[in-house]
Image (cartoon, rainbow, N blue to C red):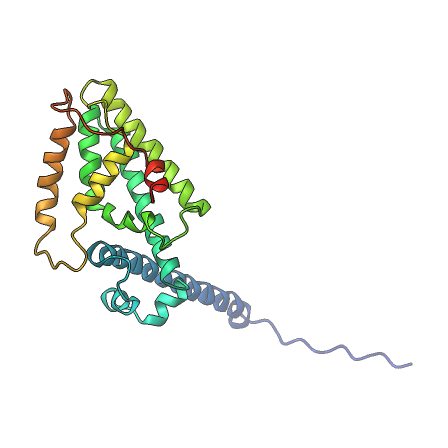
Length: 235
């Protein structure tokens, strides 16, 4: 029997030896750029949608959000299946960023009431008014992610208010729900109102509100202190 011929292998040269790793590296780099671009687009859409929700409410057309974000409609639908999913993620984003603010204020400010002031103004800058959809039927309020985000925010604000209350600087007849309702109302213009330069008034009005929170209380509030859970149950 004759011997089976062994296929000849092309000689390995410096060029061929490095071709595959270079190609793989280039592919990985391209994929990384694509992922980075996709993440930037997603964040841009969320920020734009947050502003639009604050300004116009949950019924703003997705076409308008795409136009404002500088992306095509298809880009929005690549990230979010529909309006409901987009609002869900906007709400999660706002709650997460607001929880970051309350935790930072509590950790970094030596004075409890100054920490509360810092949080309230920071929450306004985070567009806390965009949380209004959480109190509507637009999204699934019982979604596990939303429950977890709401609980984290509730715990943080409760701790912040508890510290201010324990220091004797915060009146004792308000709860987290009271604070969040006031924040939402004071940081969200009427949808479609076209209120000019609304933001210039927000922090002035918040400062007036904070003055009303300070102890000793100058009046008796009707009803009882509200929690975030109360706000959910009353919808």
